[in-house]
Length: 133
Image 1: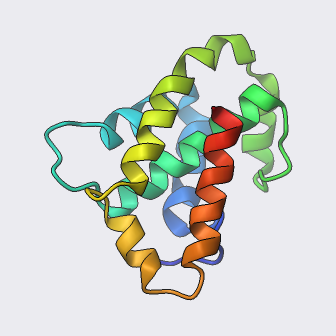
Image 2: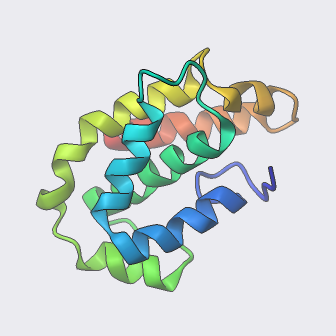
Image 3: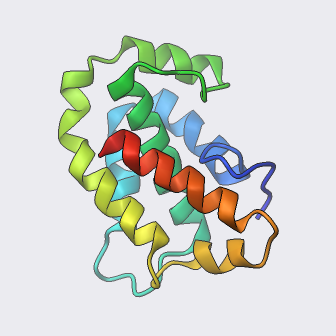
């Protein structure tokens, strides 16, 4: 996993996901949450966890209007063009997906525990959870 920071959009999987959102819009967000919550997956792998975190970050930007964490110009334009009321229904699903990413059936917490930035990563996810909650 190539990671350059603890933020939800600071890894290679999130960067690829941003391109999907710019192309497919809200469908990509919903799909990332659905995959994270798929009951047939006993373990949420790191890639899907990163995608769910990125989707939650993007949803939070849409709902709050705060695009400061969005470095991709195409994504920022998409977020600014979306009516927040049209995506508000994704909030509970995003929160569930965040819980799954942080839970014992997720690969990401284990991977982060092996780094010096584990606490910063958890704090960022909790910040994101608070923004959506």
